[in-house]
Image (cartoon, rainbow, N blue to C red; front, top):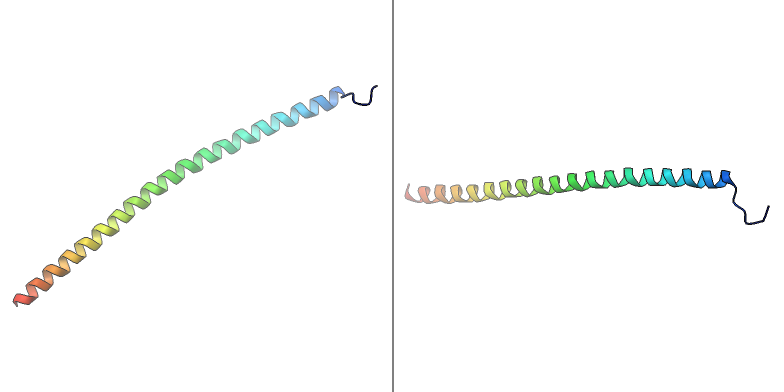
Length: 74
């Protein structure tokens, strides 16, 4: 056999390794997509929480101003 000859066993092993790498790649891609979706969901939840906090602060500021104004009359 020539020195640079590749046996059928080596070809089979290389093809098996390629199939495993493709499978791993597909699994990792699925995980990345799932994490991306989760990140988008968390960003939306954070934006809603920030809005609720800002609204609460604004209401508290308005109420404290109204109470102060009423106390000024009493």
